[in-house]
Length: 288
Picture (cartoon, rainbow, N blue to C red):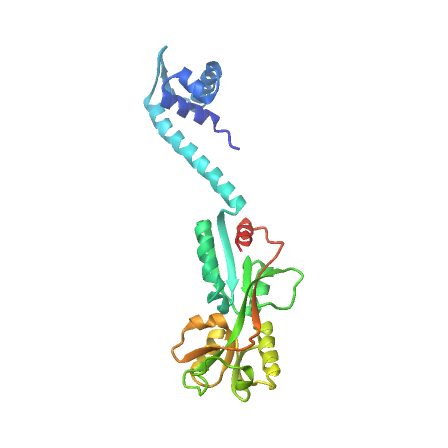
């Protein structure tokens, strides 16, 4: 650490105005304290102290140096505190990428909890198309990603953080919109709007397999990248969709959501690279 002892000794003496009391506060004997302050004055080339047998007073130069030295000591203490906080992940920067679906389930809660626990960490939340998230984690563009499970990658670790059922999204004018719940077989022959395979392969697979369990292959009319686009097309009445239940929070005026009997559960995972040494990431993982 930077040797700031002479400054600390001087500030203590300036505040006590007595060599004996200053030495006691610093846990020193008086002669070494006197030598340190004499050396400080010699290095500066100015007289800081007017000494008398009973007390010490500051010269004009000493008063100025006292104010500056006190500010320097405060800055050094703050710098040490900042460095320690950054090393432990209590301060710094953290970038988290996420899918649109995550914006409607885990992301708001995580952001609120992490922000409250670590207010000195700048949390950068980035909504990213799902198939780009793993690549951005590996490239170090983001520290972690909240996404649908995908093809395992040797450079990425994943942890399941949410399981939620699929539900049916219908136009408010659809004949089945008044049903309290639906079976998948009731959607046979309907035009479907789906996320494309490269964007969310696990979600698409779950939808196709559930349709097949109901005895039909879905009639896929539109393939898109974003769940919001899926719902926008449903809103226009061009098809139906199976979406994660949390997408109900999107609240499009022309779309209704109905529970799906025996619905498969869709996972969201947190993905990160073990090679990432950002201490703020370690804090986030502990919280999750």
